[in-house]
Length: 271
Image 1 (cartoon, rainbow, N blue to C red):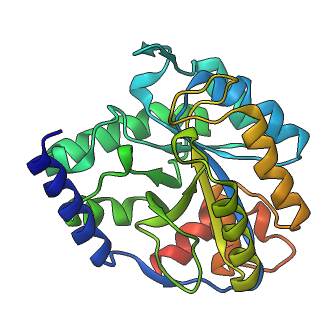
Image 2 (image 1 turned 180 degrees about the vertical axis):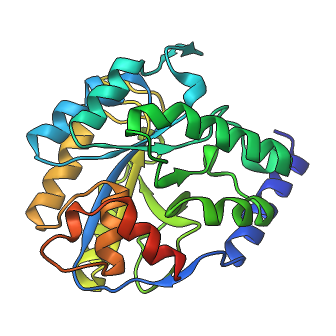
């Protein structure tokens, strides 16, 4: 990308963060965390899934329908059987756009077509329901595309670093990267400490999981280390859609973690 293009992208991203498309105040009753995987490389499930299982937690896999069964630039992506298996195991399949294109590059008509195509792709895997959670491809978002997607999902995640506590924008939630290119144990530890102190919502994200990950991926040891730190801090780890129910204070405390789309939809429509 040219310097002019990079400057335009940063300005657009800054403008998007200034637009509060879904302002909301989290209840802050207790800390919670989520682990998410973008693009859904196959080894995020075959290598990452068993690590989550050993820790007794479930994650969110932000899925682009166009990647199903594909190998792109050396990355092997999930297959239909992988998607069926993770949903059956209680993990969440979120939306990441069908074509996985930066949202500011698409016209509003193209955004609508892409969103509908990915929803239709995920529909049979989700027992006929629509995905609750969305992550912007490449973290790219503009004020226009943010306003477009805001009413279509219960929550939307960007790539801006930070935890979510107090007043937040459900249309652009913060995250902490577990990617090799910016791996920093001190940053992760500090985020966990702040989540405990502020009773916040800590969302981690990465892509592939392997012993030799891409710069956007994570090793099994890195993922295990992160989950171990959360366990030591006694912070529960829930898929993004279920964690949202908790942080919004929907329903009784006893059943919040198990609630799904109905309560989330009702709560977020009132934000």
